[in-house]
Image 1 (cartoon, rainbow, N blue to C red):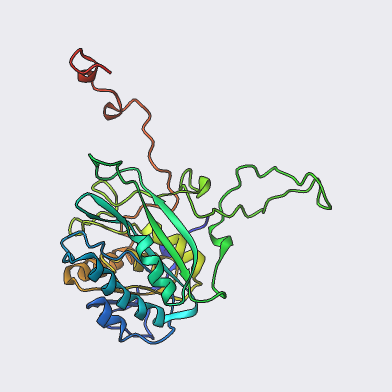
Image 2 (cartoon, rainbow, N blue to C red):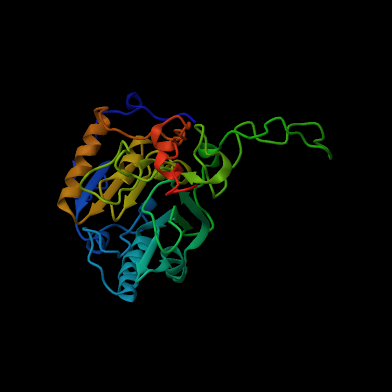
Amino acid sequence: MAQLTLSDHRERPEISRHFQPKQKMGVIRADALKACRKLPDEFFSLIISSPPYNIGKNYEKKIDFESYLEDRKTVIAELVRVLKSDGSLCWQVGNYLDQGEVYPLDIYFYPVFKSLGLQLRNRIIWHFGHGLHAKKRFSGRYETLLWFTKSAQYIFNLDAVRVPSKYPGKRHYKGAKKGMPSGNPLGKNPSDFWALLQSEFDDCVWDIPNVKSNHPEKIAEHPCQFPVELVERCVLSMTCEGDWVLDPYGGVGSAAIAALKHNRRAVSIDRDELFCEITCRRIVDFYEGNLKMRPLGKPVHQPSGNEKVSQVPIDWKTEVFPI
């Protein structure tokens, strides 16, 4: 898939610290609800965000679960208002944990979106290979992205995200098209369970590394960073060039960068001034060609077996630790 490069962009847009509909980029320091209430009706083609999970990270205050859901429902109602009639809303969440019990947030958020009239198009699995190791349950290695639309008429650019067919030589074996190629020359639909391996989306797991210490996009000040790569396929498939993208919980601006990279316009909202400053700095770095990003579709690293860390420790081969 062709990607835009720095040379495809014109000069860096002015970064407004307030919403300006005639500009290309806004980075707003504000509470999500207060900021969204000031945005115009039916304006954004894509709203994509990963809200705080109410697990006590340094950018949130943990509250009781019911209050957390009610608070988010108020914000979501505003998001539905500002979403265009043919627009999409993508809500990426993991789990809320309470005394070891898992509450899958996508299940709790689904009725909230349905009560506001949105229609679910896909429940997408984002798989990552590394994370915290659990001791009393299996270690979590995926999160979910709920893709809702406001109506039955919505933007979906399938050709922008097609992947190479596994068997492009397959042919129809009966009927009027017998003997003719059965696939699409542009590639196949990647489905809702994607693996980003070998520079493609094949095998249908969004196998996108989460942003940990050795990830090129890692910002030390943010503990739960949104990978740009995850947003890009939503931007490409659910918007057109020049459309507006909104992230109401913008963090350090990954959604905004994904939008700008593909010649969209963006608004990023976050109540943390440091995160907003980092977002502005990353946008400048992007346009100057200095922003480190994991390339879209880059193969996920697979150990060869020769690395020392991928070999069984000699300690485990002793009588004390028999394998």
